[in-house]
Length: 145
Image (cartoon, rainbow, N blue to C red; front, side):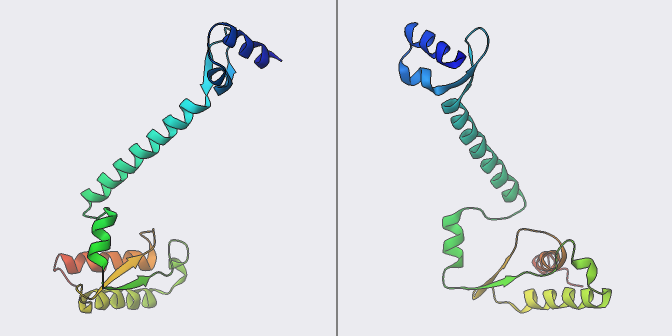
């Protein structure tokens, strides 16, 4: 009932009906404190800003984020997807098997021809994926074992 009364007051005060309907709640003084349209716009702006900051952080790490450039770099190459035991499951693998996985990841990055294939990992930096990331870093910096 209060909302209806406030909408009528807003409309009678010269506001257009679409503006009045956009308000969801208002204070005792009738001042809007939540506007669905403004909140949507603010959230979209915050998501865009977060995307920009993430891309900058990734670029600082040397990670390419431009979709067109990635597509151009990957064109005609074979993707190799590596995934495996991660944060919780990595501890369930024996130390000997962990060493074997580490060695296998190093061999993979050392023999892979980057002109013919590329490696994809999941979104974590734990377990098998971490071992691959570290192996690739060692290869890229030529500090193998």
